[in-house]
Length: 171
Image 1 (cartoon, rainbow, N blue to C red):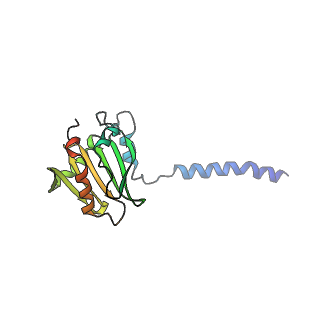
Image 2: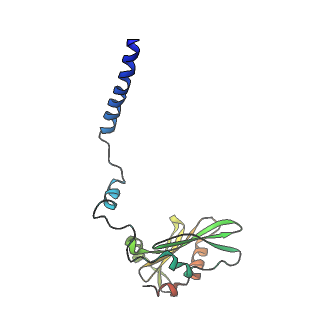
Image 3: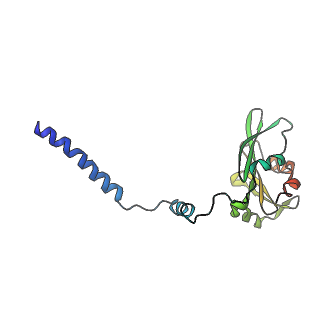
């Protein structure tokens, strides 16, 4: 009986020591550790800029569905709005407008653009299967393929259907 009680008492102690030793061992920092540190804490920048446009304000600039395509709004938050483009019940592309005031790097990548669409810098990103334009150095309008049948030409055609002129009037 005494041996049995002794084992019961020792087991939690052994487990505690094992957890303490393995938990306190030095590990290589996570590749996300610096991002976590930069985005949390007292002086961290806000995730969404205070001056970012409300996502609902973007909805009126999206193209309507046409020729067998249906536009279905899927996400809306401050600085961003997104709609899925469906054909025959299948999602073939995603349309989006984002306010780059919260993420200046998104606007910066358009500086190297050599193409234009309605005088706005056009950027095709084949690896991401997306094409976008930057309106007024602030609003990124993007079309991303979700199906192989939706080509780069289709993306550019749908970008032209956005009301880019109307979007350019937003401050």
